[in-house]
Image (tube, rainbow, N blue to C red; front, side, top):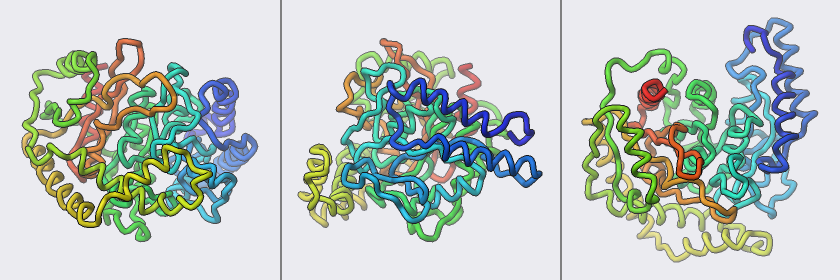
Length: 424
């Protein structure tokens, strides 16, 4: 694009053609206006013709999860309650994408309020199976070639699980790396904005654009950027120290996944399981306490309009009402103890490996799959990347999850690149 070898209009038209062909089966989008997208693309091409300085995403189509505000497109947060809602301003990430030259293609399907109330999207590899949630449409749209990049979010496992189920690259950065101003908040303590693409290089390209400090998001790291594009240009020297992380999630793994995972990891050399600190034993319960209490505090304010909410959403909100303030504060304190204990594992390894999901995407569209393999890293704010490197017994994708030390996202990308090169 920068070399003027391909026009933005041509690329957007190709994406729209794929949309016309596949959207009736995949149902990844809640809003996509072809003329609006083409108008943005033509403006990009005119800027190219004028010789203007081009941003890193100049002319590239990007999809946005429908919890991210857009001043020129509706944002319904996956809920009938907000059908037709039109924000008055862009979210910070929307603004950053526009400033980088991206074409905002449209809004992708999300579960209601980014919880677990499933919507219409189907897995592009098998329409009888879930694409995962809550970033269902964002992952499916990238996997099916309707858009090269998209944004999602993760409070439990909502970025990495859909990436695994749909067979794309997904990235959840270190907590506080990408601003959430103008994004529907499910849990300030847990919410991460993440990105999908079909390569590590594209993940790095779009993530670098978004990792900008925003004072309006109080949980942001002051130095948010990780210079991921530069990191990929500096390969790992030697062989990175890798460890397999099992711990509580392994109790939920499907019968066929361990052998598939072991066969893949075995190709990287002799990699031992890390010793999981005992403090991690109740991590899943702690995550549930924080998330369920948060759901009551924010989505819960919409309970007076329960007739317009999904039954699943009402049930999730109701669970949180039983959590006391003392239990919530205790869970926050325990989460920090777990983070410190897990951080200590990185004194002996450079990255941890695990499956990105218990197995293949489940059959059925009412259940978005188990987020158990992501909850630990969401709770502790550690960065994770999933690589589409495994295939289940039914031919469906399963991701390899690579976990890095908090704040060391650049090193995580270098190691993920090394792993892909070894397994190519």
